[in-house]
Length: 158
Image 1: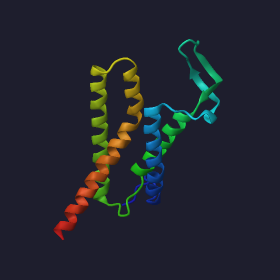
Image 2: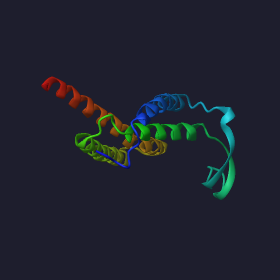
Image 3: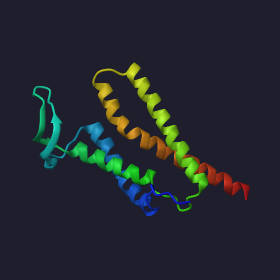
């Protein structure tokens, strides 16, 4: 089965090679708060507003891009893993991919609704930051789990 929106299968391995170290770096960054000093640079910002600064539109600012780079690399790796073809891309895989994507969107927004009701203050900001990644993470976990489970079932039936 041909899908024009999926990457070739070789991108899955590249995605895992990117996603795993980036996730580890993200966890370390979250726990320690460490930002590499050499990643402080001038960047163009459409909009910026500091706690004690006035809002600024379309200007250059000096900031540390450690968190930005880690987030971008996690998203790129997760997209490669999520949307690369399997070795044998058939109707079952397509249905599994669609159901896993729908399932991950439902779970993500149920978790987000719970956060709206039960998480407040700066903690809610952290929930929103992590929310950028949860649809892809839930999709990857569910898709690969069901794929593994179905492969195991098929081997037992033979």
